[in-house]
Length: 274
Image (tube, rainbow, N blue to C red):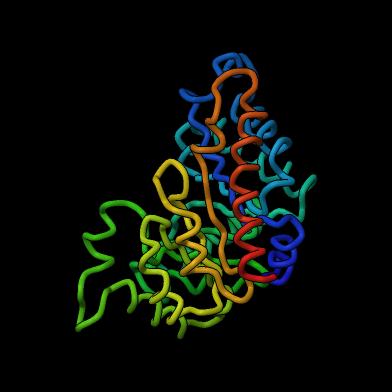
């Protein structure tokens, strides 16, 4: 999917919502455990009830890898279902990969070619040659960790290095890499006050923003400081949507929570673009 196609979907749906498909078998309705593939059954119902309200889905691969081959098969079925039935949806493999060049190339092939995701999250700690193999794929996007929403982010990301926060140096350096136009960045919603400075460094890039909902991030603050001329935001909510209910009405409850966020996003879009 191209960036322009994503932008068009955002304006068409009046939404920049990304739903995280992080399936924990201890949290889904118990009756689903009787299914042959409870993970895919759960995901399919969530997708069927929310696809008109969001522009992206983001399975965190850890929630599939934890269940071994069955979990990976469920991930495969989920992305295939999305690509076949909702090709307009932007898909994110939240895998946080990043290794030496030849290994990164294999990771990229796994997610972009075999599973056919539109994007994958990567960790840039090993530098240029760990990220550029992902950037080489046409119309695929590499979403690089920049400033995350967890407490441990302050251990390294905001430390002063040669008079500047480390995450800012990472952002500036990434702009010099080959095919850097294919980069997007992860910036946590709980760090909304940093967004204005981040936008000075990467004014045109899309930001994947987790932390709205269960982690307490504020949508209005994120939009105030992070939205750009092309919207430039994908706001992710996982637990707050998919676990809105653990009863038989779980899909309807998820749709209700997704719609609440979508309506707030529509207001923000109107405020910024009309």
